[in-house]
Image (cartoon, rainbow, N blue to C red; front, top):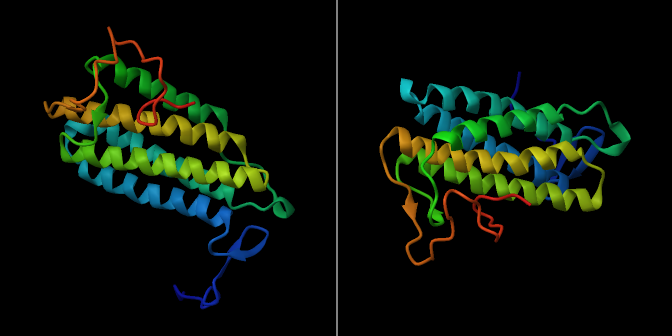
Length: 201
């Protein structure tokens, strides 16, 4: 089997149902999910020892589910099939987040990406996930998309935030606080102001 086909040499690519430009909003959306999945794979490879068994297993599931999300976004209306992304996937993310946050130390300030290499990479996953969500929202203005993909990506970025903090905790490395900001978290409560860093809309 040849890897190259030469069919995309003029700037078009195939989606399920036809061909579009490679900078089409649909390709941008599922392409960014593919980019995110590459970072997820890198993070899973970095979390190789037994301390991270739970996170590594969760990331393996996330990798499969991100492929489902990308597949759903690759459908054009003319060739729509049953979607793969469903509510139970988002509900499982919420369960993971709750368990991670039950063990993570209380937040007092906003935090910066970093601390340990695994946490830093999980923050990369978080920010790329936010971009994937934005690309999917843009696509949803132009075409019908599976709304469960939007929900999943929104919750997934929160998962990466919690997982990054959990990685630092396991390594006994402090989160990097944004020291120029005020103490916006009190007693573990969420701030009133929603932020791109942790909170979804």
